[in-house]
Image (cartoon, rainbow over all chains, first blue to last red; front, side):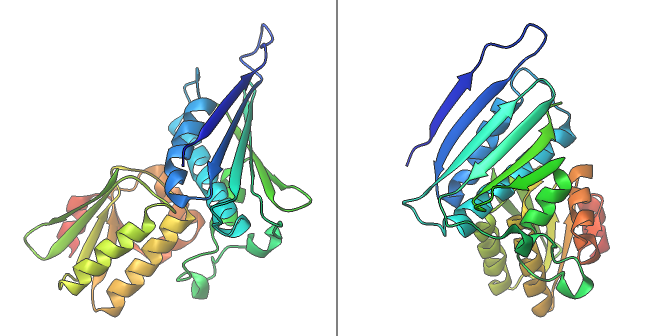
Length: 153
Length: 111
């Protein structure tokens, strides 16, 4: 399977770098997550010099969102895709990740296994990490799209 | 990108994570540690000095690996975490579950 990477750019206002829109569709294949994260990070920070902390936050939260979309949303169904959309202004990255599943209730995974007796749990940390690393997080009503914002610098 | 396993000659197996530990490669790390356990290795030092980022799947894999090593009478430690990785372990409270040392040399000296 190959990636389809489509980049749309609107004419930036004289005083701004963006807005720029980046769209990417990927198969429900966890082996591709690392590559997509690097591609999107490259797009989101093009022309910018992000601090290491910001790049780290973007990569972790995007990997989490893609992983959730592939495994939980799409149930790893190879016939379903995951759609990544980024809107970039000079200061803010707004990322959304949409799967083709029926939609999930995000409240089920928000807490995270942080109590002492829960620490040895292998899973359940994804949304917890996203909520703490992103500036803002939200979900579509249907529950198959997560969006988040991060600083661009 | 990937995992590099080296033996230090004093019974410690050092596994360096290069790039990232995420949903796509966590099984590879699990298999590597499992093979090492079956080969008789019991002391593991995970070198994160070349690790850019870890997601929740990667953290979960480390939790499971650590548990398995302890169940086999062994010990697993983490070394070389940068500030971002360290903060991720603190956020998820996993710093309480792992022995985390500043450098690989510190880890080797501690075994």
